[in-house]
Amino acid sequence: MADLDKGRAVYLLNRILEAELAGVVRYTHYSLLVFGHNRIPIVSWMREQAAESLTHAQQAGEMITLLGEYPSLTIGPLLDSYQHDVEAMMRESLENEAKALALYRELLRCAEGHSVIIEEYARQMVYAEELHASEVDKMLRKPGKVAAFRPEENLPGNRI
Ligand SMILES: [Fe+2]
Image (cartoon, rainbow, N blue to C red):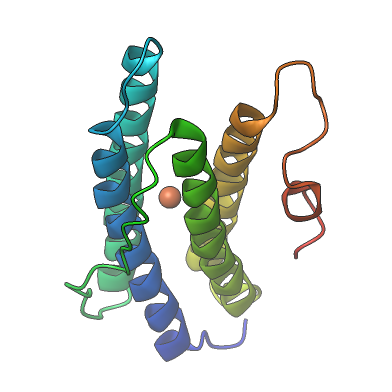
């Protein structure tokens, strides 16, 4: 097995760590701005996503220290769009999740054939993030519509 490009892997892992930490803040922020009769399940779903992002950030950090490197203390970009209806928040979340997913895919390409542990980790995360994106996509569909909200980006297998 050829050597892993550790510098590249750690760079990607740090960007993942930062993106996931931004997700914690973003979902927490969204969860504070949900009003109306569907508030309770949506708030709890958003807080679950915040907790999941924190777990993902911690997993990325553990991979960085596993490689003997230093984890970033920075957090990914956060932009307040001041759009607070649930659909706008979901669309924004899908865009941000797509960026994180792209980083996990890049990490998978970087590790493939070079490091079983990083490859396996990245593959599991691509799976988890794709599943998550598909869930958000389904939430963005109008009741009765089966077609994907963003079919070109969300159909599995056309990005890797
Ligand atoms: Fe994540």
